[in-house]
Length: 240
Image (tube, rainbow, N blue to C red; front, side, top):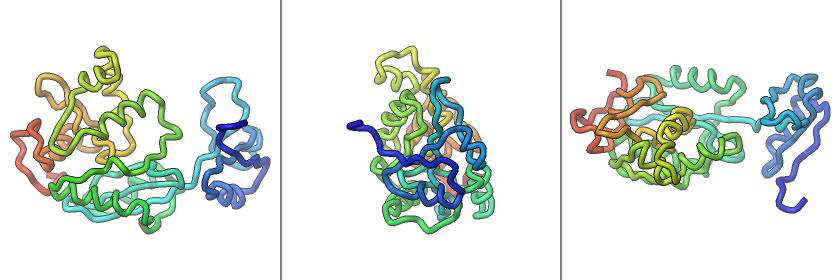
């Protein structure tokens, strides 16, 4: 049918062939749930009971890199970034964090198309201004409302902030502030989708779901020179 993404029918393929199929750019392999169980392939629950086929997850790779405040990382597939990992004290801690989220992921060199994204994250962690709005994201499993929230958050420049309520108003309903906060709490791409730049009303920082909680959020804002964090000196240590 015109406009639909092409798929590969893959009944009872072995894992090796499934991985090869998943590497095909522009194709989303599918198989029945019964075949998925026989092949040992993870198959997320369908959004509706009537869906009979399982859309396989693309293979995920990840890479670690050094920043001014620790070892950070990105994970990706052929569609774009699947995750960003905030800086950790050392590479092993960062690596363990990725493998907890993506047990089947393989460590690999950063691909050329994501080199600018890595450079931008490194620049931001040095306190420099960097634009990450061109970084490609894999939004295939992101709810539509979350994607709209992330699009607005990505447009917030370094050193500036918006409140949950302001984003809700841009979405057309100021009563959605709580839902905005919940969406940002599930953001898999911190820094690239700068959820730390979204604060509560009345000068309060609001929450932050990453390790370190609101303290990490305020330190990131301080690094960027945001007025929302006037009492936090710029520092190169997320772990104090």
